[in-house]
Length: 151
Image (cartoon, rainbow, N blue to C red):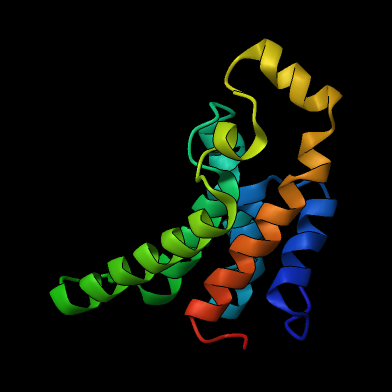
């Protein structure tokens, strides 16, 4: 991945390469934060489609939260750093939900992709290609801003 690209451009490039929302969002930050891109893609795989295509928490949201954790999480007990990381996540959630009105796939897409018929409806309406790129872009941008990585 080209580290000179903006994080949103990297995420959009991954999404266009057919990676899911979580993979695209988390993958955009991986190498910059010291994680191999292939490892990041594997880690984020089950978070796509609202966690295994169950339509729960949006994959772009999950990917951004994983990036916040990779950047600011703790690997040993440190209550102050843990609290600061939680605060970043709260800020992210507040900003994303204020912009889009929801954090879940059904709330964002208007259909419950956990239901096979509704999933087909989402595919028929091309929602994954018309709406999801915006969620990936916005989640990536918000996370990058919170981490001070982009203006």
